[in-house]
Length: 77
Image (cartoon, rainbow, N blue to C red; front, side, top):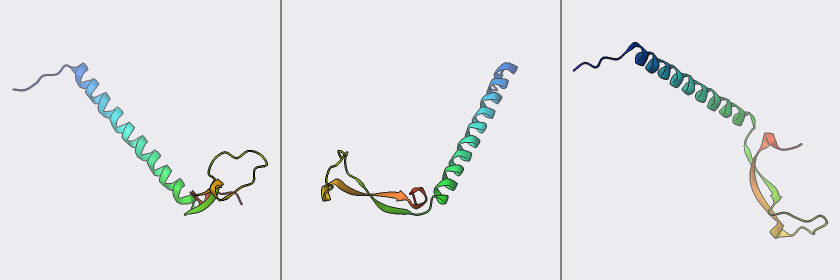
């Protein structure tokens, strides 16, 4: 049996299809930009960071420092 749709329903379906295509295109564009930015940040390197909050003037010991990955291009000179 053939379903009959009103012109309004067909326009609504068409609008939904166009909106879906635009959303997919926007998401793909954003994802491509994120990948370009990640490549420009360089390789990941291990850097020393504080393992927890340290009070001003505290003596830093082995338990106060941890290694964390960071993109080389995001590090200060």
